[in-house]
Amino acid sequence: MIYFYLFLAGLIAFSISTLTAGGGALMLLPVLSFMIGAPAVAPVLNLGNFLGRPVRLVLFWKYIHWSIVRYYLPASLIGAFLGAWLLVSIPVKEVQLIIGLFLISTLFQFQFGKRKRAFTMKLWYFFPLGLVIPFVTSVTGALGPLLNPFLLNYEMNKEELIATKTFNSFAAGVVQVGSYTFFGALHGKLWLWGLMLGLGIGAGNYVGKKLLANISEQSFRLWAILFMVISGVLLVLESLLS
Image 1 (tube, rainbow, N blue to C red):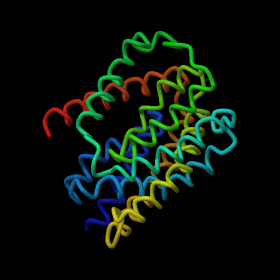
Image 2 (cartoon, one colour):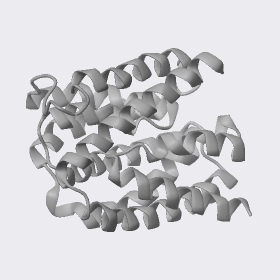
Image 3 (cartoon, helix red, strand yellow):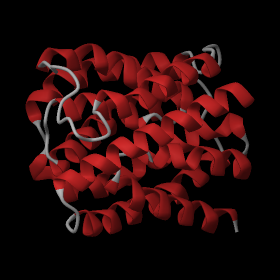
Image 4 (cartoon, helix red, strand yellow):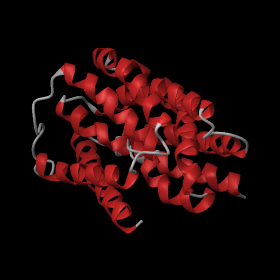
């Protein structure tokens, strides 16, 4: 039954995450921790996410913002490798607390959704972000919403934001999964768990794309901000209580 539950969890989480510009992996953190144990969460979640992304890539390909990719992608490959390498030695709780507080602050940065931009976002900023975000994601297993404030401040529409994030994440995922395997964090039944989760995530991406067409840009922005705040609260609570 664990394979069915992994598929179902991926389907539900990523149907919702398309409407909130990410966060599906974060929703899966407590579920996977309960089902397969905390040590296996990061590699299984990143493998499932990697396997499920091609569906979203096909659905949103024409909306990819290639100028951002040129800055973000090269650095993200380095960040993903370093994060997988240091998976066992990084103080995850402290990282989660800092990121959680930042995500909560987006509610005030965007003035509860009234502001379109909280700060000026220049194109070259995506290079250092490419180093930091995949690094942290490789360690924790899920921090998709962390990139959202920067993309929102670049004033992208909902399809561009999702498409650009997905392409960059997929490319970094190649390095993450390869590095997990090389360093021994991904092995045996973890591959099967990741495969079933990935199938569910792929199905969830398809369902989410259908739902996305029915919401406005303003609603999308509000949902994205709301989920960033919820994600921040969950990260802070987990870092303090675990």
